[in-house]
Image (cartoon, rainbow, N blue to C red; front, side):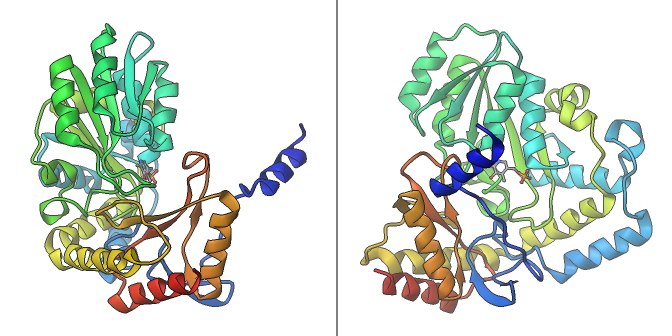
Length: 380
Ligand SMILES: *Cc1c(COP(=O)(O)O)cnc(C)c1O
């Protein structure tokens, strides 16, 4: 099949993806093609992506450090701003050491392929993020997938394995469902079966736990078996990612993680922006409190109507539709009401489970939620 035919088929199946072009900053209100929209679409859960303190930190860091880092971390790209941030991140999540990566996608590829290889086995939740799946393929380890959050199947797979190294990988908060992984049960299984546990807290960091310290704090978990990864482009509002764990684990990543070694370090001004953001994440409990209020308002508002939200206590509130075209049509109908809510289709989610991914931000108001509920109710 030539490329054009493949694209045409994608369009006919309601699977063609397109981009919107924002004309201004990320936020609760965005401008696209000359129209203003109330948006429930970003991962900017705390409303920090356009915070003036972050922009100011970038300006000051640019004066001090310039723009480009100019090299990879292991040559001469590692600077004071990166070093300071790594220490802050490790302290914040309560782990011995942290290592910065340029993106979460790269962090996952780097960690998994540094820790396991051909002889080893990786146990993965079926709803894990694509980057974790790609990471296992790159590592060449054997991948065993278990049904979403099914601890019984995971236990059986672990018990059957005689791989020299076992690694369980899971999203902390599942990115398209919004539910939270059973972390205590996962850790108990890993301890019983001598496995490492990699948790990808892309959607929990900044949102869950005391001061936004993330999912480990939320469940009060600590173990040398845990390798913690979180991203800095979502609730933190900047970009990048980090992996934290015990000192030997992080040193192993510095020696072996190819997506750390063979790539240019983040600009120091990005690290400075993350440091500035972290101070706000830690201090501004009102942002997490506001999110809790908004989540409750949305769920109550839709409880009696036709539309069904998946069970979720996080800012990710998916509205299950089913068909691809139906999900697109609902998204477009909301668009006509001035609301931007993206339709998520396979392969990002399983077949026949296309949905609207409503994502909430501390930048939203109760009135914004009411507008969304009213528009959805009018589309019955
Ligand atoms: C967004 C996301 C990533 C990728 O992080 P980036 O920094 O955007 O590359 C990884 N894992 C999960 C669960 C995510 O949602």
